[in-house]
Length: 147
Picture (cartoon, rainbow, N blue to C red):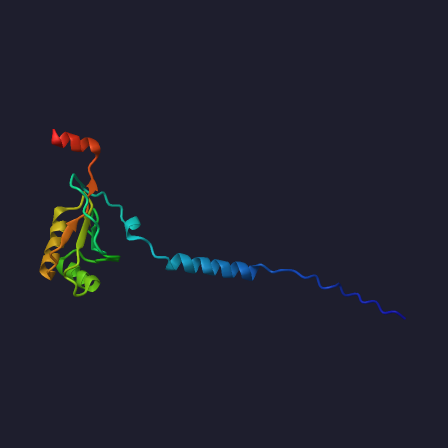
């Protein structure tokens, strides 16, 4: 007497759900931990100037001032716009190095008081090498000024 095995053979299958879960978790991890460039975050319209560009020196300390008068020292945002908060942020980023060149990038629409406050904080901390970032003037504007 022959006894028939009525069970179906096991059909192997690949379950993709755990793989998709792992890939989505990795994607979320990389998106959250990615650092963004500070220049891409702020839309600055620099003032124009005719001078010749100066050779870049070793890693200047950057202060960005947006059109609303908010400060960004290095890659950190200063939460308040008073001199003491700006000085504290400068101390945290620069440490004791007062010989470091400071590059101020202020939007052309920035209130002048915000720029003066940055100069005041730098002077109180003892920074003496301060530069302003500008964009080169258009070629037509240079000819008009010289005439």
